[in-house]
Length: 142
Image (tube, rainbow, N blue to C red; front, side):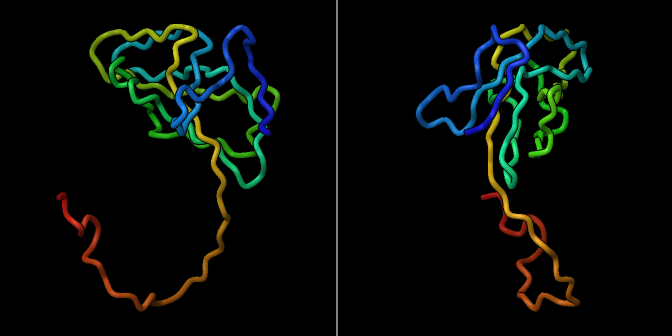
Protein backbone atom coordinates (compact mmCIF):
# COMPACT_ATOMS: atom_id res chain seq x y z
CA UNK A 1 0.00 0.00 0.00
CA UNK A 2 1.32 3.44 -0.99
CA UNK A 3 0.60 6.44 1.23
CA UNK A 4 -0.65 9.43 -0.74
CA UNK A 5 -1.57 13.00 0.14
CA UNK A 6 -3.58 15.12 -2.29
CA UNK A 7 -2.81 18.83 -2.06
CA UNK A 8 -6.33 19.59 -3.32
CA UNK A 9 -8.77 16.90 -2.20
CA UNK A 10 -11.42 18.08 -4.66
CA UNK A 11 -9.36 16.57 -7.49
CA UNK A 12 -9.38 12.77 -8.00
CA UNK A 13 -6.81 10.31 -6.78
CA UNK A 14 -4.49 8.93 -9.46
CA UNK A 15 -6.05 5.94 -11.14
CA UNK A 16 -5.53 3.35 -13.83
CA UNK A 17 -8.00 4.26 -16.58
CA UNK A 18 -8.11 0.83 -18.23
CA UNK A 19 -7.58 -2.76 -17.13
CA UNK A 20 -4.32 -2.95 -19.11
CA UNK A 21 -2.94 0.48 -18.14
CA UNK A 22 0.62 0.43 -16.81
CA UNK A 23 0.53 4.01 -15.53
CA UNK A 24 -1.87 5.93 -13.31
CA UNK A 25 -3.10 9.25 -14.68
CA UNK A 26 -2.19 12.46 -12.87
CA UNK A 27 -4.03 15.74 -13.32
CA UNK A 28 -2.97 19.37 -13.18
CA UNK A 29 -3.73 20.96 -9.82
CA UNK A 30 -3.72 24.47 -11.30
CA UNK A 31 -4.41 26.06 -14.66
CA UNK A 32 -1.01 26.80 -16.21
CA UNK A 33 -0.37 28.84 -19.37
CA UNK A 34 2.90 28.34 -21.22
CA UNK A 35 4.16 30.88 -23.71
CA UNK A 36 5.93 29.63 -26.86
CA UNK A 37 9.24 27.88 -26.05
CA UNK A 38 8.61 28.26 -22.30
CA UNK A 39 9.09 25.68 -19.54
CA UNK A 40 6.76 25.69 -16.54
CA UNK A 41 6.19 23.27 -13.70
CA UNK A 42 2.65 21.90 -13.55
CA UNK A 43 1.73 20.71 -10.04
CA UNK A 44 0.30 17.18 -10.12
CA UNK A 45 -1.51 17.22 -6.76
CA UNK A 46 0.24 14.24 -5.17
CA UNK A 47 2.74 13.77 -2.38
CA UNK A 48 3.77 10.12 -2.02
CA UNK A 49 5.48 7.87 0.46
CA UNK A 50 6.76 4.88 -1.46
CA UNK A 51 8.75 1.91 -0.16
CA UNK A 52 12.55 1.82 -0.19
CA UNK A 53 13.97 0.27 -3.35
CA UNK A 54 11.10 1.76 -5.34
CA UNK A 55 10.85 4.90 -7.44
CA UNK A 56 8.15 6.89 -9.17
CA UNK A 57 8.50 7.35 -12.92
CA UNK A 58 6.56 10.41 -14.17
CA UNK A 59 6.00 10.75 -17.90
CA UNK A 60 3.64 12.81 -20.02
CA UNK A 61 0.49 11.08 -21.22
CA UNK A 62 0.82 9.96 -24.81
CA UNK A 63 -1.66 12.67 -25.90
CA UNK A 64 0.44 15.53 -24.45
CA UNK A 65 2.10 16.21 -27.81
CA UNK A 66 -1.32 17.01 -29.28
CA UNK A 67 -1.47 19.93 -26.85
CA UNK A 68 1.92 21.22 -27.99
CA UNK A 69 3.86 20.24 -24.89
CA UNK A 70 6.47 17.68 -23.98
CA UNK A 71 8.27 16.90 -20.75
CA UNK A 72 11.37 19.08 -20.55
CA UNK A 73 13.42 16.47 -18.69
CA UNK A 74 12.16 13.51 -20.80
CA UNK A 75 11.02 11.55 -17.75
CA UNK A 76 10.91 12.34 -14.07
CA UNK A 77 12.25 10.09 -11.36
CA UNK A 78 10.94 10.41 -7.82
CA UNK A 79 13.08 8.75 -5.18
CA UNK A 80 11.67 7.09 -2.07
CA UNK A 81 13.09 9.88 0.11
CA UNK A 82 11.16 12.54 -1.88
CA UNK A 83 8.33 12.24 0.60
CA UNK A 84 8.23 15.39 2.70
CA UNK A 85 4.95 17.04 3.57
CA UNK A 86 5.33 19.52 0.68
CA UNK A 87 7.16 17.33 -1.87
CA UNK A 88 4.46 17.56 -4.52
CA UNK A 89 5.20 15.97 -7.87
CA UNK A 90 5.29 18.27 -10.91
CA UNK A 91 5.49 17.89 -14.66
CA UNK A 92 8.24 20.01 -16.21
CA UNK A 93 6.29 20.99 -19.33
CA UNK A 94 7.89 22.57 -22.40
CA UNK A 95 5.74 24.35 -24.97
CA UNK A 96 7.52 23.55 -28.24
CA UNK A 97 5.02 25.46 -30.38
CA UNK A 98 4.81 29.07 -31.53
CA UNK A 99 1.49 29.59 -29.75
CA UNK A 100 0.36 29.92 -26.15
CA UNK A 101 -0.73 26.61 -24.56
CA UNK A 102 -3.02 26.41 -21.53
CA UNK A 103 -3.32 23.32 -19.37
CA UNK A 104 -6.56 23.51 -17.42
CA UNK A 105 -6.94 22.55 -13.77
CA UNK A 106 -8.06 18.92 -13.55
CA UNK A 107 -6.74 17.97 -17.00
CA UNK A 108 -5.06 14.55 -17.05
CA UNK A 109 -1.61 15.55 -18.25
CA UNK A 110 0.89 13.02 -16.86
CA UNK A 111 1.12 9.42 -15.78
CA UNK A 112 3.13 7.66 -13.13
CA UNK A 113 4.44 4.20 -12.59
CA UNK A 114 5.80 2.96 -9.27
CA UNK A 115 8.64 0.55 -9.95
CA UNK A 116 11.12 -1.43 -7.90
CA UNK A 117 14.85 -1.50 -8.51
CA UNK A 118 18.00 -3.23 -7.33
CA UNK A 119 21.00 -1.19 -6.30
CA UNK A 120 24.24 -2.45 -7.79
CA UNK A 121 27.93 -2.18 -7.03
CA UNK A 122 30.64 -1.91 -9.65
CA UNK A 123 33.73 -4.02 -10.04
CA UNK A 124 36.15 -2.12 -12.27
CA UNK A 125 38.11 -4.30 -14.72
CA UNK A 126 40.58 -3.65 -17.53
CA UNK A 127 38.65 -5.82 -20.01
CA UNK A 128 35.25 -7.49 -20.22
CA UNK A 129 36.52 -10.17 -22.61
CA UNK A 130 33.27 -10.20 -24.59
CA UNK A 131 32.82 -10.03 -28.37
CA UNK A 132 31.92 -6.54 -29.71
CA UNK A 133 28.50 -6.14 -31.36
CA UNK A 134 29.62 -3.37 -33.69
CA UNK A 135 28.99 -0.17 -31.71
CA UNK A 136 26.03 1.99 -30.81
CA UNK A 137 23.09 1.41 -33.17
CA UNK A 138 24.69 -1.70 -34.63
CA UNK A 139 21.47 -3.64 -35.15
CA UNK A 140 20.21 -1.20 -37.78
CA UNK A 141 16.82 0.41 -38.33
CA UNK A 142 14.79 -2.46 -39.84
